[in-house]
Image (cartoon, rainbow, N blue to C red; front, side, top):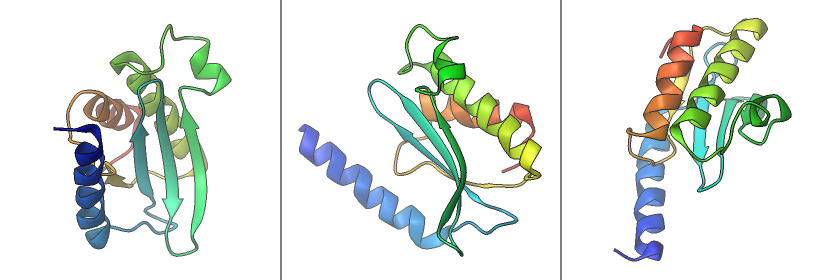
Length: 121
């Protein structure tokens, strides 16, 4: 499978997923994105079209603890950090948006560490 076909397949999955889920202020959407070098996570309120909070492996606090941001360890740190940040804001329930990525590897590690931090989805 060529790179272009892979990206197009992910974007098709993303459209199918996004038709059915959206975030509110009380239950925001936890949107996850992965690149080769970093992991990103955001809490999004789709009703008001605002990003509530977000983090990535490029964050200074997380980057200092990691050797590389594009691995499972980086994903776990991002999940833990976004979970703690959400709890401190007062958010306990979220809707998980895997952004068209398959639920395994780094996406799964981020989701599990966010659950361990106290988020429910």
